[in-house]
Image (cartoon, rainbow, N blue to C red; front, top):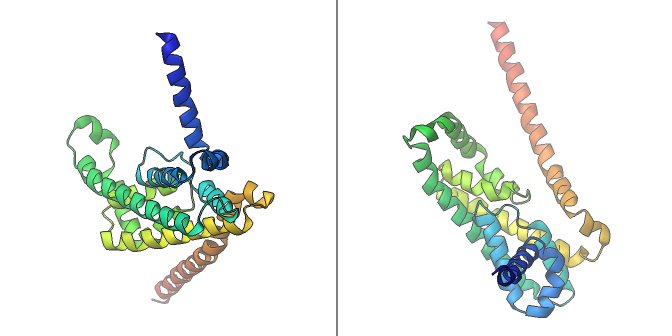
Length: 234
């Protein structure tokens, strides 16, 4: 029996390794399975963004490598972009709907064991946070592994409006997919860019976010100092 099971186990382990490191095996996969690669990429991006149990799947590197192979003529860049956009948007939407359905049910439970671990005040704070910053969070989370898997779920659990969520969901997907696929398409064969992709992406986000954050901090400081001045004047 053991001898029969071992080949199946080897096949399963090989499949798991292939999925987790699809970015490294993409070239071989394209040459072996041809157009099936589009379906595999769709499913990986959909699962990473749509199911909270798959935050470990590759995202950024997969889009980048896909763009590089498209530049080499092994994939159609237009079809790749459209497919990944659909996967990213529908994945986030499913994740949001799961959060919207599960969140209230879990936090309104009266099961004693669960009530010990659930902080309803924290849920209310999260709801307030998403009211103010939900749009920015959904867009920026696209570029941060693991966070992008949980952000839409939390948005749903905190009852962020569907219309607002979808607006930033589509915007974030457009920026994420276009930026990384085209970055791979034009610069994918440069070893430095390929090796430090995540650092480059995060540095770009930092360059965009830091000035906004500093501006908000400056307004906050000025507002407090102005309020203190009025109080002392009275």
